[in-house]
Image (tube, rainbow, N blue to C red; front, side, top):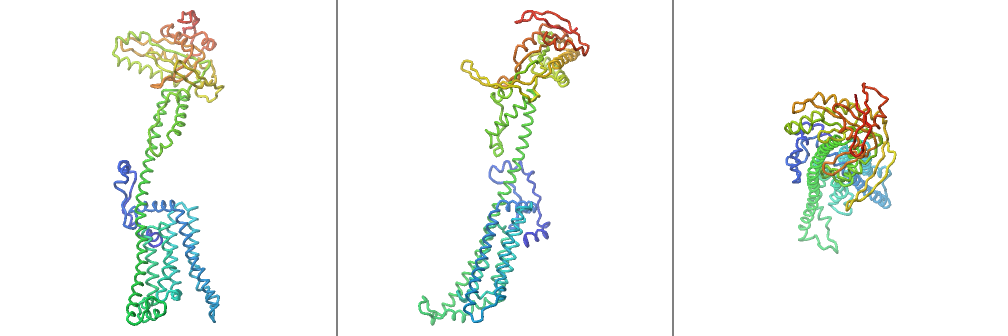
Length: 580
């Protein structure tokens, strides 16, 4: 602003800047105190100059200008009308006067008499245009408040000049005190719009004080209007006895009439001063509440950002956990469905900072039901595990399995297979699951009922991957698993021995259960692969004939196969192949 704002801020800003308020340092305290409606230790403020942190004050003024755009433009519109009306009546009055006067004023006299009002009109119109420009182009909207104050100060200057030249105009209709009526209605009434335009208290005090001093003190003193208004002879002359008056100011009543004229003159003057004081007080009260609301909004905004960061961290942790339980494509589908559900059922999350939703059973099953063809399933099993578990302490067994399965987990990353689950000492992997592909060959919906239970799900037929490569990836994993397992000593002092079995066929993947849900593979392929492991030999890989057909022509890693016939539970005699 100009005197108490822009220039004053530039000249005395460093002196006024007494605090560096950092909202982040008050967040923990704010999260508790805001529940009671106010910040316990808010930024310090001057009585009328705003925050002692001047950068914060500029942010506040910018916020006020942004939030009160309609009031700013509405105030300028009223100011234009307030100046336009006297201008129109002045023109009408001049025309009427020129018709009656033998020596009417010239065009130059008219122009000179109307020039101050025209300048005032131009000033308010320019303020409107400049404010519009600031709102459209300038980043800091606080400049609007500078413009408002500047416009009022220019108006005060033009009004002072105009009043000094035409203070006798209202004497025709209002007598000896007509100059006070003219000052009130023509030059001081525009100050009422400072409340509409939310001018800060320091600038309201400046505008009303400067304008009031010029109009009510400077011009009347310069033109000797005070002595005229309190001149007893002039008062009596204007109150000459006339028929029809309620009070005849003659004789004994002459002294009363003089006193009454002065009394009501002082009363009108006091009312004008009182209105100016009220404007400053109302501005102070309004901006005190607005500054408190501004601080609360800043704190709430930072709290929201902190909660959003915390939510993002929790979300990332949750996604990482889901990806460690399910294949990445399945985990991605689960997270995506969770986000869709949260956006519908928890639209108020950002405002109320609610908890992260857990996944329901329907979320899981609808997201992960897939059909896969030519998938190679492989099982590993520890020979003598049951006897070892009876001889060793439980924590020793658990520690041993953790070391072994962690080693298998590292192998999975190198052989491009999927870890499905661990069952006791058994380790199950799958190769050829098209989880990373977004291509879906077909999609069907199924529904069924079992007793009182009913369910419905969608079965997605996924893209078939290269069966030969998938089978070899599984066998290479089994070979590495045998090598790594043979290097470990079991808790009972014996060297670890592993059996491996594999089979290739069709499977369906899905998530089962709601409490501790598990990603599982279903189908006869899983059963046959398990039988290949259980009927196999120590430190050997046994594969079914279906798997052998896919790898028989490939002799990488020096792997050779020996044909055999095994009795498989539920299958009878089956042809299988063992590594040499």
